[in-house]
Length: 162
Image 1: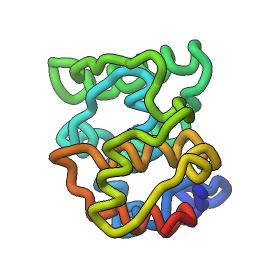
Image 2: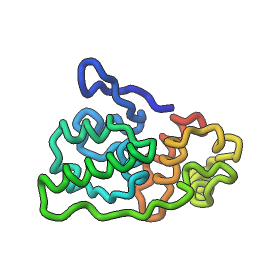
Image 3: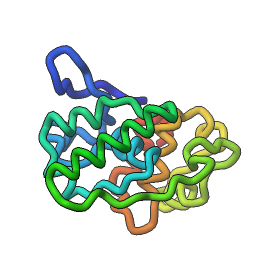
């Protein structure tokens, strides 16, 4: 489950995962909630771009909704405008698969099963289906080949799977 671990403003708690606590105070890395939204809107935001943004810009990307088609389009525009304030080239586009992999609940993605097996864990279909789309996104992201997978086990634990 998503936990409100850090308050970026005195009145508004922000959803970060427990395994992200080493950087949520400073927002030095792109949190999963923002990565999720970037993948939804098809923008490849590099860490270099993220670090050029002001704290207010980063907070905007954490909080701005990105669910409906209109919100997704607005989020994409916000990201591109923020990056263009700091450099002449906009961020690259990412293809947006249809359907979004984390929305598919008919089977656990093979890469998630493989990563779980590598750490001696199992993710059943029933467990996969019980996760939120954001949690499924996190497990897919953390199990990608070439990705630093050190947060995969903490994510499994946090989601009640390990």
